[in-house]
Image (cartoon, rainbow, N blue to C red; front, side, top):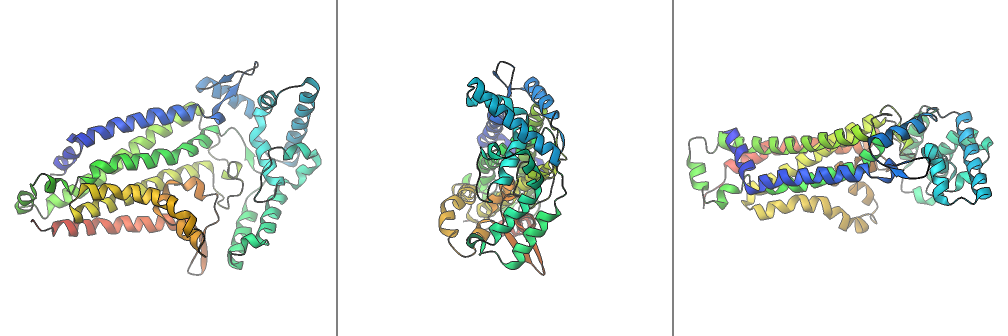
Length: 407
């Protein structure tokens, strides 16, 4: 019975279309990921190169700057940046030529810029005004910038407990940070939200018909009057929907991750995420961020799909239920400007289901929540809330559909 329901999903025109659209999605997203400006290598003549071999060359370049970001290493970067700028002035080099020359250590250069700019500012040329002696203040500046911002009027919405929590997390970051090639993880995080959101929207069409199908075919009277119509048959529909959503999501994410990390490289998995997200108070590695993104996307995809199934089971309308994912994904964009003006608006927006697809962005935000006597970030709360919702929706959908009345 379960296999029959699963076959029904895949045999419909919408089911076959899903397979085609997911394949097309993977081709386009993987192509753009590999062609991303961060995934480019400049040869000795300044020509752009993309692809596996190009990334091997870029990796070799950045391995020369790999290691602990100690004061000496940071001073070396500042000095090298100054040398390249002086050379550019003497030879009349263009900004593009300068970019080619700093490409090997541009990640470190960006970190230095962020450290020596104010908390809410960024100046690409800040490093040009620094001397190598400033390197000794690098890690201290990260905490100082946070403290100064927390004392400003802009941060008055935060409580003293929240400010203390952020400061503590910043101070807990182990330094000096390790640096190495990490372009694969960096680019993967850029396109991951696109992949997971589009997968949800694609599969929403066949999911909408799982419980509305019998009504549309006017076969609901036969379905519910059969021996297992209000028992095993309902459970088979529910399990088929969950398996379909799970399989579609994980196949897509695994293929996407394998292609991007395979071509761009998976080096740097153990580096701290602050190498990429400087202000984050989550002291986790790139691989841990990867796990949060893929499992966050799955929890978001499954919970929204289950809400769609509930609407479908209740209304018997595929048209109404298919709108659910679109509303839950895009509605926050339209209401964010209004809701953010409320006292706790950002915290409300930070718990909407679309945030599960945007974990890489959530890691850079300061949405904090008090749970009992402790304080925690949005990531932990999102996983808890929507895991509970998903588990609760399974028996609810079963109960709602098995009690359906045939009209």
